[in-house]
Length: 386
Figure 1 (cartoon, rainbow, N blue to C red):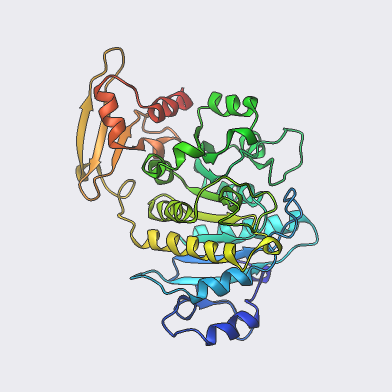
Figure 2: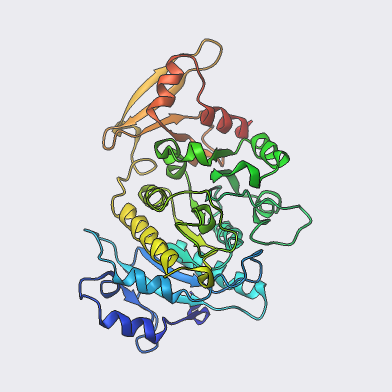
């Protein structure tokens, strides 16, 4: 890993940490400081780093600055009963060009992934999601992305890469390693009917805000994600004002923390980002505090991973076969360890989509199938394989 891209945590944050309890989060992790340098990552499972890049963030210039406000709140929290080693690597500063910053971010994420370290990315515009996605190219696998956002951020195909056009770049540019994209919490009046129709035509999973608030419905979506990207603008303005595109409607603070825990508890999620934090709009550091708690809940989730699929064999599950009148049967699997459900897609052994053979689902999907109602996520996955 090229550590030259990373700047250390500012001294004022470390000075504030001295005033905290020795049991606080900041005193339990390894921190990149001017004095100590980059921490040893040999036994680290989670690595936090910030991105100070706002040049392609539309209508939210200033995001990526003042990430020390988030760290001060995070460091003062107390960890749970965790068994993971965590490092804070500092920040990637703005490069001479946006492309320079993108290169640095991609290099850091790619290096961490190869070391089996989960990156937690804070700051910068949501266009960093595209860079995060490209960092998986070297792994030569298809990728699932779940974005928590009030907007789809499709933009136009001819647009340059921005925080509101990154998704079209992910869909259209080669190499195309995207298997599934899911949007959690979109608000219809922020998205054209043409955009909604396009995503439905691509058999992607989209959940309106009202439905997404039924959190048990969206839990399987996070269980199937590799990359989770959260636009802090998906949280209602009264809860998280630090975003120039904030809206009166959105998730509540406790809901976005529960979503962050779902992302952490997923055995498949290997990178997690929270974007579009703009400190100049923050009120009494309220958003910084909320983001700190979201990171806390993500780490909490990682520590409670059950190592279900894809870590277990099918012998660790109860199998249920549902016969359909006009189609092949659907095999459902229930984990003996957690009680979570999956449904099977029949894929030939050498198919590049083999890692998507089991689709996370809910018990409701199983009961619907017994009533001859084909689960929507199963149908969409099958359509993408045709």
